[in-house]
Image (cartoon, rainbow, N blue to C red; front, side):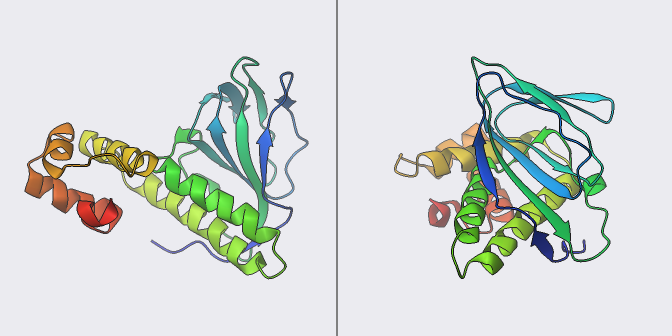
Length: 201
């Protein structure tokens, strides 16, 4: 799989905490927009489809897109968004699972925070571009790898470890949760996290 080409961030990456009466009906987008839901509930209409919005749902909207989004005022949306261009003519949108929940939400949230923070540093623009590129590459890789129940269980375990790293994490118990033997669990965990469970914890 080719890597995502160089990106050019066109406006400051930003976290939006939507007001109670929020709705989004932009004019046709002039560039790409990575749009990542952190929390809340809502709905987006795009390309004659209706997508449910909840934590972890992500879009890479291409130039010309005209999404329409609303949210539940009782469960207001928090969203990370960044407008960007690609240095090469590269059709990215079809290579991403639009409107689906990202497997590794914690990693994407971390990269989003770094992207936003670096962009506002005098010497951080290049690091912000790198964070964005990494996010886009993760989304492409996830789209190329179909989910399996075991992968979903492993992703949930990885997210739980990130959320509570100080908890008591036992390989045997984690393996049971994923319906694997401890040796199978360790092997599959290494494939996804690129390190053994104990090192990851």
